[in-house]
Length: 403
Picture 1 (tube, rainbow, N blue to C red):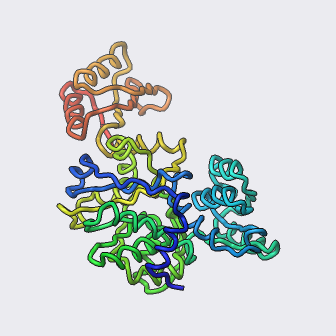
Picture 2: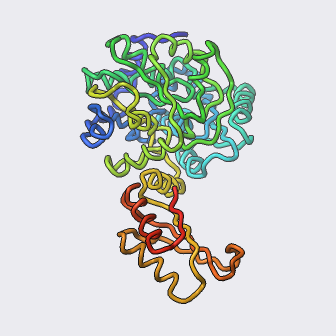
């Protein structure tokens, strides 16, 4: 079934009062960085921290009485599960979610807190999905797909209606892409009302699911590589999503892990907003300044904020390193009193800050008269790193400063 604008408008009316019309805020800071007039659609402000509850609630409201009584089942490791569990509880519809055994503990506990039955099964998402479908058939439960479902796509499309209501003269909308449900919904709504608006999908380079399908002209199963945008790491796009994407998506761009980490960092620093990797990919694309969007009014769909807290530190460090604000200094110094102090003095005189020092005698080079010193150093930028490297060389200290 291919959805139309009327389906999305009906979903908007159905969701009224239960789904937040989230802000689409202008960002002067990001506008300067991206060379465009940037607006951020903050759908991470939904109750569960993700756009996914739009489609989940719309699907639940369209169930018949028997399906509502029996309940629903889904396979998900994250935001789809949270959206279904939350709105299932509000609507009194039993929800069962099959999650892979590696699903983040915080998302497992949050789903259980919403009253969902959680079943951990399988080492891959496909194993969890197959088990959920089999269990649904055995128990008489309606299986709710995370993206390849007309009601889900129509629910996600309400986001597009909100964008046009808040930024009616938008010229381009950058949308994260995993299975394709979000961009199919937004694209359908926007192209029906303002066909001149460019719809740009953004995928992680390590998970080019829809990009591959569009290039090949058919559904293709890929093997996603590890990515900070784990919510986009889907093996195959949805059949309905692909059919719609052919009509409403103008282009797909891919972003690497360094850009994604930098985008998360920029949003934390400049927008005071914590966005998960899957939600940050639109900014990752816009930061490249290579999309031909200079001077245009663009909307970045920041659709999720459920980042694993243990991951934030790693992301910050990677982003700082990319910026030239965090570096590793490795030096060989004489194994005698005062040598380490001399090294640290040079570092201090350049204005750099030492975060950590490791002084290694046991596994140093064969020359027993020297030791290896490794430091984590905070610097202002790449030019500051160059200054530090030059200062060490000027006093005869052999050192490398990376990255």
